[in-house]
Image 1 (cartoon, rainbow, N blue to C red):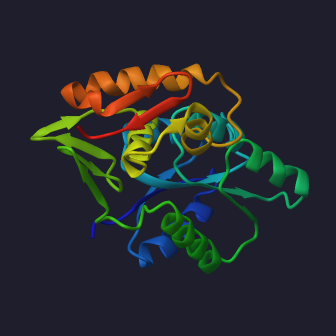
Image 2 (cartoon, one colour; image 1 turned 180 degrees about the horizontal axis):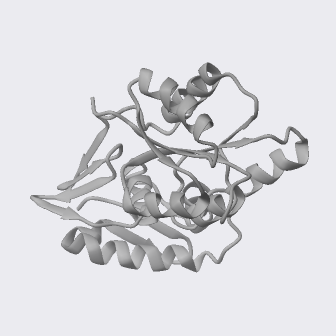
Length: 225
């Protein structure tokens, strides 16, 4: 099994080292960032990051801003660290897409346990999970799609959309259902964003793009011919 890569973002080097040491003991690969801007640079440069541990209070760009930016492109699991233990901060975190919320000071062992539980929920610890349908092979853990010998370059949302289609092959999916499951229930954008992503996805899949059928007035269905 390949090691899972985690990005730890905190402006305190001692905190980063503490978290890193415990994660490394559990066989994780850890990348560090000292502020929000550096975190985004690393995130965009590394497509194989499986989870982000993100501090709130940081220079240049705080954790809330980083989370909002990442949520525009990815549903990657995010654990938010904060010194604030009030309910208002916690609710703010969940509203912008934080998956777990841990207040400082915390037990590193508990943090690692939360990391493992969250990765299990999102299937990121199952490195052998590969979907193969109609000549399309999807490695969910590595975020790799191949058709024959060719790697298909997909954005995060295109990848998540394809996985959702494949895992629900043969089922008619409304735009609302797709939004709820791929863009999350709290997405307030226009459902037409789905049509745009489907169009791009079909194009990138080439002749396999015909597997994505349009159900007029409702949504889509993935069906291998």
